[in-house]
Length: 96
Image (cartoon, rainbow, N blue to C red):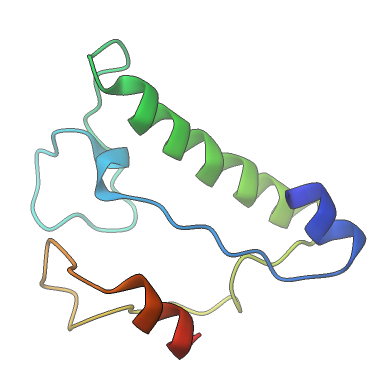
């Protein structure tokens, strides 16, 4: 999908999860927090898959110029103090 976004000069939308932080040692997590993950845990394939998707997206941005957002912070819901978002996907898509 990233290759296609590059080819047609489209912006790329990636949705991630708080699971990329694993079992965090701080709450709420800052964007600079790397996480406290267990790469061999029962659910690690989900967590690591999301982390990999974030990494690939950032690499495509840095190396190929594929934009994932507008280079601006984006608050999907609330003031940043919420640790869980019960956002309806349809509402998010409508807002974008």
